Structure formats: C-alpha cells, structure tokens
Image (cartoon, rainbow, N blue to C red; front, side, top):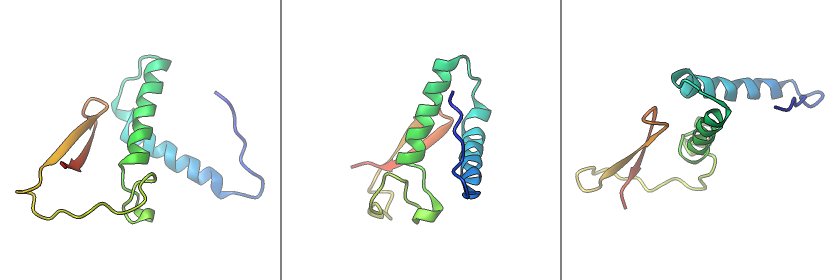
Length: 99
C-alpha cells in the first residue's frame, strides 16, 4: 500500500476519497468476509467494474462513468426480457435489457 498525499490548497480532495471509501464499505466490504489479500483484490476489482460500467451516478444524469449516452428506454417489459447479472455472489445485481 502506498500513501498518497493530497494536493496543496485542495481541501475537497479528502472528501472525495472519503465518499468512495464509504461507498465501497457500505455496498461491498460490509457484506463480505475477506479471507486474504488476493480475495480482497478480487472483490475490489469486481466492485470497481460494477461502479464504473453499470452503477448509475446522479451527477451524470443516472449514467455510469464509462457510458457516453443514455440507453434506449424500453417501456413494455412483456415484449423485452430483462437479464439479471449477479455480482459478488449475488451481493449486487445488475439488470440489462436482453437484445
């Protein structure tokens, strides 16, 4: 682990770090018993993929960080199927429309 110092005259940097650490703890680490460093790396990598590729962010109009445009809206769920992907053994569920 490396210690990273915050930039001078940027007091909000620490708040951003505390926010993401809190999200990681509440949404993933509080529900998983970490066995060793390799397991911790696996859990954190899975959460990182979920956070950047699927999880909606309010400041980005409910888009994930890696998305560039809003997905097409589907209103009739009887015609279009919804697929569920279980992340971290079912701790987090991701939902997508089937193609």
